[in-house]
Length: 373
Image (tube, rainbow, N blue to C red):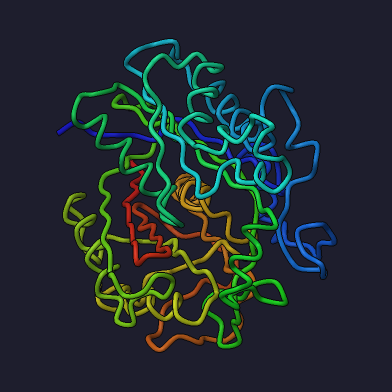
């Protein structure tokens, strides 16, 4: 089976417009989370939101589409291959895309068709010179990881030589009120895996990886990926963690990796009571309770369709730089099963990373990233 590598990447977030800037911010323990005063909510709330300049760009595209395009173009500039090529795939990951249109414009304005992610993906692919038919992955909060797994399988099957995988979401009143209705939003910056955690913090970002069947000098191997569903509840995760464990086990089997070979776990870590407990139980079942683990939600908030991509990119650069990033907001262990949450920035010899994600509807995903250098 063809091997698949991550050969270029970009993160566009409140911490910077490229991956390098984001890494610098994380090394300085800077968070994009701020107290916000905006029309999204009647009351001030904590979130990591992009400034208006980051959302501007080509006038014929929406703010959502402009941040995707900016992220993809930066990643493409960091990769040598030509892109007007039928052997290049394009995958868009998002939970809500242009949902803000229904908040701002009447039905008869003729713009509601843009809410459909397939139309949005088609417009962006054409602008970027992608000639293959774009694919949309919208599967709650595992969308980013599922998009990477889908791109990996496309290359492994011989369908494409390389695949551009991009994801983004912007926080709107619709999205904020939805999470608020679940009483899931913390009144403070989130505290993943902490004893006092009380909910998520939302965030905005776009992120892109370019996957290829051809290895470059500093590429990272995407060696395994799997998904599962626990069918527990429309919004509440499994209480046992067995189903996320199934995705972890299958991804590790695909990669040919044992628990002892994992050096870092990049958890979903939303800072809700049930999610963090479920993840801790799944990691315990996988025999990796002692493996260094972080959640990046304290830097970015929960970026929804971009989360899996943003956190995978930081993780692969952690492997390249042998650097363990701490979990902002964590101070005291607070999960039923103990996990080894990273508290301070430190170096360590890193070879392989497990990245996990879970989402509404009981969906779970896991991938394995490997540093070959």
